[in-house]
Length: 109
Image 1 (tube, rainbow, N blue to C red):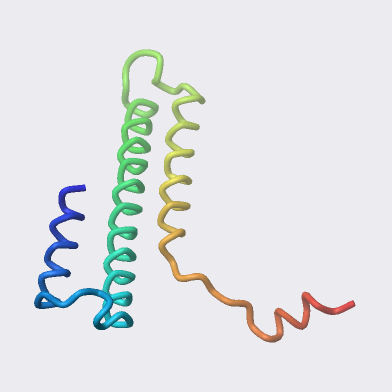
Image 2: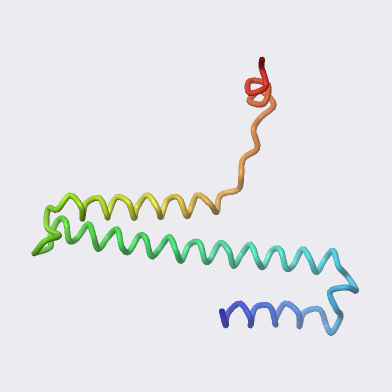
């Protein structure tokens, strides 16, 4: 959170004392870009947590000692964490709009 505050402060300092209302379109675009960058970074941090959990569960399943060794639940935890990491990263991909042919196919009676 502190990083977010410092980045917003730096952005506002680049406006040289002007307020957002004095050049609204540029200001809004800068804030949108910063928000998108922060969202990407946060999504990647969440996906990395899932990757780490998947690796730990996989290690426990394959090489661990104790209840996690060759346990289907541990294997499932690894698979599930990998799937979640992929879904989190997929949220960062730009949305693809359907083509005209796809729309026509959807709208056929």
